Every structure is written in structure tokens, then in C-alpha cells.
Length: 285
Image 1 (cartoon, rainbow, N blue to C red):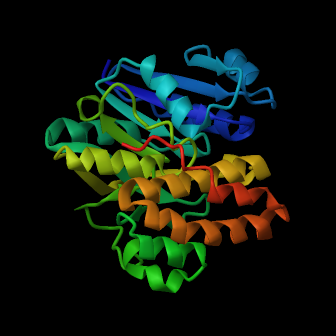
Image 2: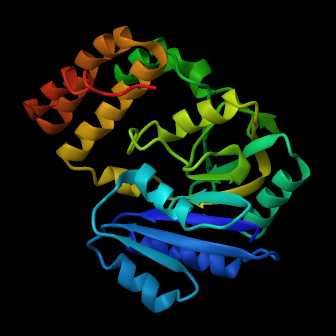
């Protein structure tokens, strides 16, 4: 098995349908498998996959295990030499899967390859960033994005192939030998799991590359947009855990009030106060 395509889906029935149709229309010339992990959807996504795509391996999770957990479940059932993580809100084009695998095949020093992402209207989506610092986090969550031009790579020429730190995990192909027993650290259940993965892959000496010759269509974070207050709280806990893991307790202390006020504005709820206390028992590596 050359490539395993893993798609984790939560209530994205019609987008998932379009994604699977695009894979069926643009199959690579080598053996591959498609695995869909349905993360406790309630919109009949799983039934649609069973009815319309019998070639797909469907794994039903009774609960939403998060993006990290869903992809790890898919990985455990996969066999491919290369693993393509694909968002359920994407559509592959002719050559997408084949060219990414071919790129890894020709470059044994590369652990992850990403590609160009475009909106349905053909406009470019910025999909790569540098690894964030605490200063980047403060600027980002205070909505001072103009201070993060370097981190957000606003000047990045998306027509040039180059090594990057952190591509969007909406579409990345990963060499199986660059990973361990799972893809993501499930402590980062929703956010920053991809950043942590790239950190770990880079520290092992692998390169992470962006290639402009391959592209996908990305409709854009549909599952995350549905997030209720309890899920948003987990998202902010993930953020704090990442910065505490990589920059220490001082980073958590600095970012906690910022994230609390963001949560308060978004939900009109004070349950976000738990952000100040939720990480004191976390086991940090």
C-alpha cells in the first residue's frame, strides 16, 4: 500500500461527499486506501459513506474524539507507506495525491510535504506559518495581526518550493517512518496538534516542504465553525497547553486572561474562568 488517505469528519456530510467524489475522480496509479473516521456525526454522514462509497473504509466513533483522536484512529487502521491527512472540506485535483507521493519518494530527507490551497473561487489561501513564539500568541489573540507579519509569512511567495515550519494539516502527506505510534499528541485534541507534530518531526531531523505544483480546493474549517461553548473551551485549553509545553508556565500565566476575555466575548459565559486552572495537573512532556 503506497498511500493511506485519512479523513476525519464531524457533521460535514455534503462537503465530505464532494471530497470523496474528488478522490474517486482523481485516483492515483498506485495502490491506495481511503479511511473516513466519522467523529460522532449526527447528520447521516456515516450512512452516506456506506451507501455511496463502498470502497472507503469507514470507522464510526460513537463520540467526537477531536481532530487529533480521529486521525490517530485512522492511522492505526492504515497501511500506507505515506499518510495523507485530508480535511473533509477539501477537494483533490488531478495529480494531487500522485505528485505528493512522488515527491516524498524522490526525497528521502523529507518527512512532510504540503501543497497550495485555494478557495473555490480560485483565490489563494495562506497555508504556512513559522513556529509561533509567545509574543506571536499575544499579538494573535489580541487581534493585532499586523504585528505577526513574519510569523504569518505574509510575504511568502506561494509560487516557490521551499522548506517551511508549519503547514496547515488540512492537506499534508507524511512519511510513515517520520512518525511514531500515532500522528498527533491527543492532549492537543482540536488545536495546535499540527504545530506540535511539525515540531516533533523537525526535531528528528526531517524536512517539511511546501510545493506549489500541487493544489487542492479548501472550503474552510467548517467543523470548527460549528463549535459550541464547551468545544471552544477545549480549543483554548489546547492553546494554553501548547505554549506551556514549549515555553513554560509563565506563558500560560500571560495568555490565560487574554483567552478568557476572548471566550467571554464569544460566548457571554464565565465558564472560561476554568482556563486559569485547567492545566495545573497536566502532564507535560
